[in-house]
Structure formats: structure tokens, C-alpha cells
Image 1 (cartoon, helix red, strand yellow):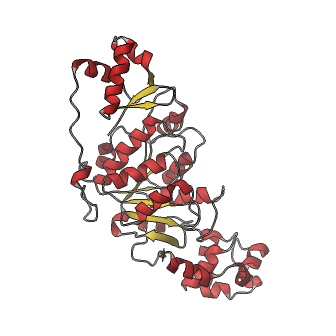
Image 2: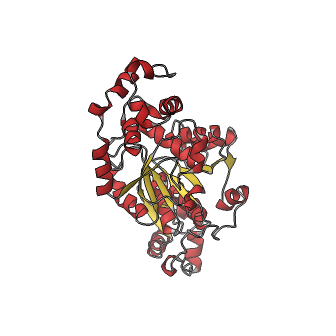
Length: 372
């Protein structure tokens, strides 16, 4: 049956909704592939073009070659009958019929929180994402996101650094990983810390259709969805809409009112998403254990090397200047004005704060506080 399901999943223009209609009509994948064009067209939504594609399956796909590739690359396949198939996906009418998995999906991953946001994120967006994702991961939740640049990447990395689990859902096949610069991150996730998954055939390239399909898996798999930073007209807002339609609670982090990168989050809040400024607010809503305790036996304890180090001691001048630095990017002149300190003293002090890991210099000689 798996070979026939792989075949149907790989056919163009069929899709999970049509596949479910076909399965209801004919019972199993093998029977579908044996039908005539006329018989297939008796199913709602199956016209002559789609029926012709299904009838021509032998020339369009090679399930045996796909299975051989899976075995060669250590990739497994989950179906709704698999032990750890995400139960939340069963509620979705357009849920995937199968998932290719690199790594392992476990029972702990039934309790996942989606964290999404902009690819072009700010330091503020990165810092808040890491704060929330690490806190939620330490509390036993799996962090699920799309492995995209920006916020997705920060969410996955923060979960790993916190000793938790994370699921990366791709908008491409597992052997055509996008973006390619996240290959090392994907390998780290799959190496005992979660899974990289996709519904697409192994060598499927990403395109404008595959990303919304990826987003619906993130939205429906999640127990709740958090948007940490997003402009208007962002894919993360599409994901939030999907999550809301599926009855999942949606959370959004507010940002500075003059930053376009936060406009999407502000719109979500106006439309009914819950405003949050600390992870415990989400945990309380979901009636889980307090922050930094674990509610899952599979959640990994932090190693001693991961424990936070005590904050470096600061003298009076350092404390005065450091107190004026936040997530807002400030020039040296602005810091001098706010602290009332001469520019030469600010320059020397900033260098010292950088060496202590408390301040980070951004592009254009602007400075922000480092959030650990």
C-alpha cells in the first residue's frame, strides 16, 4: 500500500483533498490506480485532466526508486496509521496523506507550538524569538517552524540550544532542502533533537505553491501558534490565519509602532490574537507547567555548559551607559545624549561592554543590548 500511496502523492494536480475523496470512493490506493478514466471521473473534483494523470501513473512516477532513496538517506515515511502521526493533523480536511521524515517524530511532538515570523527580521525579532522559543522548549513543548531564514531559523536554534525538541517542515523535498544554508541546522535537528519533515517527494523543488502547503502543516500540527515579528503581507500571517481557522490559539508579540517589521503582529492583535510579552503567558493559557520546568520525559535536560553564567560586574560608568541601551539600535551619539556622558567615554565603554558580551554592534555603528 505504501508504494501506491507514494505514487498518488507524487502525481501532479491530485493533492490531498482529491486523494481523500478517491480513498472514500475506492477504499485504498491500489484500487485507485487500477481504475479507468471514466470510473475516476465519477468522483467529485476529478475531471478528465486529473483522471488522465492518475491513469498514466506508471510513466509519471517511480515509487520503487523513491523508496530506495529513502533507505539510502535514512528517511522514514509516516502515514495516518503510524504510531506517532501528529493527531492534530487528523482534524484538517487537507492534511497530507504522508510525511517524509529525517530524524524521529515522537509522542512528545504531539505537544508542539508553532513559532513563525519574517525572513527579514530585526535584532529585536531575533531576541524575542529566542526568548520565547527557548522558554517554551524548556517547558517540554516541541517548537515547530518552517526552517526559513530569519525567525524560523532563530526558533529552531533556540529550541536546540535549550535542550528541547524541534520540528522543521519544509516547502520542498528532503533531498532538495531550502534554504541550502540551513543544511547544517537541519542535520542538527535530525540528529536526535527532532525531525525535518516534508509531504513532498524527495527531490521536489520549492515554489510559490509549496510554501503555503508547508504553512498549513505548521498551523494544523501546532497546539498554538506564535508570531514573533512580521510585516504586512507575510507568509507568517497566512499561517496565523490557517491556525485560527483550525481553532488554534494565536499569539503575537508587539513591537515598536514605527517599525514595518511589527505591523503584521499589530494587525493580528487588533484582529483578536493574544498579545504576549513573556512565554509564561502562553504556558498559563495552555495550562502547562511553569516556565523552565519540563512536562515531558523526552525533553532533554540542559547540560551544565548550557546553564546561564552570572552577569558580568559593571562599574558605575558602565552601568549608566548600559542602562540606556535596549533592543532599539542606537548610534554612539544617541547613547551619549541619553546617558549624559562624553563621546570618548561612551566609545571606550561600549568597547568594554562588547568584550563582556553585553552589547552588540550592528550595521552603521549602531548598538543594541545582547539578550542571552
